[in-house]
Length: 293
Image (cartoon, rainbow, N blue to C red; front, side, top):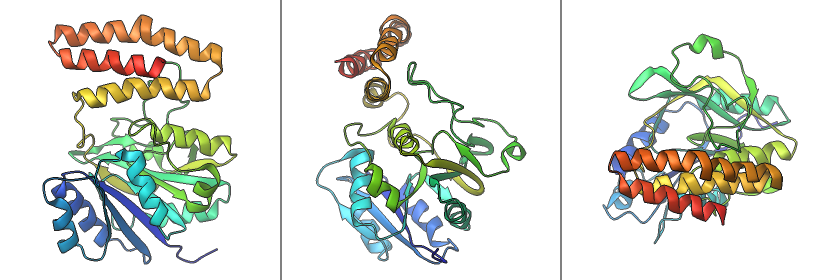
């Protein structure tokens, strides 16, 4: 067991210098002794990659000519990372200075554990919890899951390290040896549902996932694509069906498709149409179509 195994922290940046800089500055205050920070710039056009290079010379910066998505960008980072642990960290997070030590200690102390996530609070309402572990079960039929602790103010209920169903994509720590075994993120997904996919693969390989409440971060949430983004709406609709197809037997996947086309899609298209969000209605339909066929 290494006393302080190296942790490679991977951030993605896409025209968001201020967010990324705030995250890196919080990482600069980390007390953990052996980290490297890798930033993948996703073809930014606002000059943010140059500002990152000048203002944070200690980081490893990879500049892409096109946006390769959450999955592709993080895979690039893992390909060059030297750490025994990879931490996929959203650039819209701010970390507690000592958040890494409990994560590493928990994984070092549990050989069967492959991944871990910290307690995540909302940045703009830090008394409220965003993540205190995965859902009781990952609902692949409806594709609707709520993180444990979501919008509660009772952290004392979540004070122990526990096995959980899924790690959170905003702060997903994984052993590099496990990535070698199960593979990197599925680039077909691009973004959304990739943490569920990886979590399911981890558990299928016989490993566990830990929720570590002694580690804390703040998350600004959905700063890259807003909740009313047609692109986000399309990918969410598509990827939930792709995940169902990937993991469920045919008869259960058929239930998922039926739920989307008979219940979820008609209701949400009507809702978007009533709100005159025709672009979202179209995106939802197109995403559902792509996910089905």
